Length: 372
Image (cartoon, rainbow, N blue to C red; front, side, top):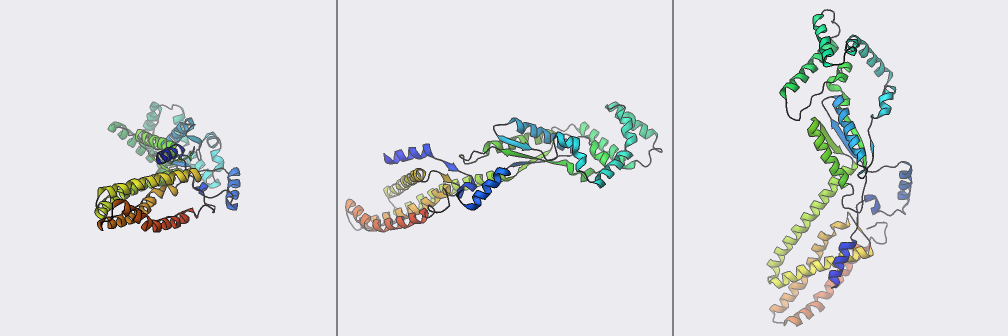
């Protein structure tokens, strides 16, 4: 009955803190300084979206699209930051360019002035082809503008071919920005970034799981829709992948340990009753230990959740020694009850001493600054 109660208590009061910072006491000086620093410069592990697109315009469009979707998910994200984006940089972006960059931009715009003037009269596709027709009719007069005209015709040809191919989920956007600046493949604006601050729940094994799953699904959908590459990185994503690896590794190790123990016990102990008694005792001990840890310590952390594998190894070692001594006495003709008594008073006392010394080793962290 007590085991059943402890199992119920462990299931209903189980808590885990996956915040690595909380594994060390806040009373330490460096933790106090760090917490004070965070008050003035708040930061947490973030989700960083890395967007790669064929053109700067497409990269900017996808970046703004993702940023708007994130802002709508107030239950998943605390904030979102778009480096180099927003109304402020749209109005004041030139102020952040160097004198040399401004002079180069001014020269390129001056070179493109005749083309821009013609296009300004009619921004439709009809106006564009009208200008292109005039260029072809007056090729001699357009000499000296090859740096603009050649990329223009090349990009226009690629755009038309892309449309005629009618490839599903394939987008090709004509980039006026690259034509005007004549930077082509060297354009750094084809890659954009978004920095999102997820809301963490450190009572769960994966604190930012909902936000990360939403981000991954959104990145996949937008990437397929607009034919761009959207990848995720940042501390939150890396920590999530690490925790997934820990969970998977711990689960596999626990299951594998139990299977190997079952095989080992069957080969070494023989009778099934000794095998079943060992396994049942092992699970009872695990339940008692978990209940004790939750009642006295309060919660587990990323280190202590791996305790199950360690407990299985230690617990079954004690059980094997006890059962082998019992089996030896039975083989000598000692009655069952007497064999149990003699095993308990003989090997049992030694195992009790081993259990105490092992417990002392585990409890050594209690008076330290380590928590959990």
